[in-house]
Image (cartoon, rainbow, N blue to C red):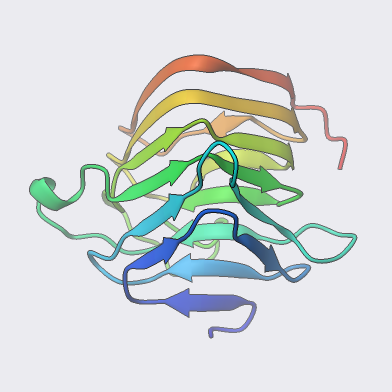
Length: 171
């Protein structure tokens, strides 16, 4: 662990039906240079990533990269995953703006049938320049700040899904 962040420096797979509860003000940070996170929910057993109290948890951060382009594609995948009540659900390049920062591709993100509900920001840059986001059937609702705030030189492909009630400041 690193203060308010649980550091993971290995590949992490979250199986169908798992609920990941993060304490208020805390987060989970992927620190390994080429490690991946796979959230493998399905239609009947989605994965939920949420806070465990009444106030928001930090969410997930990705702070390392440096892999070859062959290992950045589909490095982080989220299928049938629900993000709920998080300050920043996904931060690419830093821990929600705090050090350490990584100024390169932290691994591309592929999301399908994924929701972000009652979050400060669903996807936010922390540096993470050049990171790609491929979204299919992704829905974002009730985002207090921007629904999506991408890193420099990032690419976004978004097919299906929706973004509603962004910039509400309604925590």
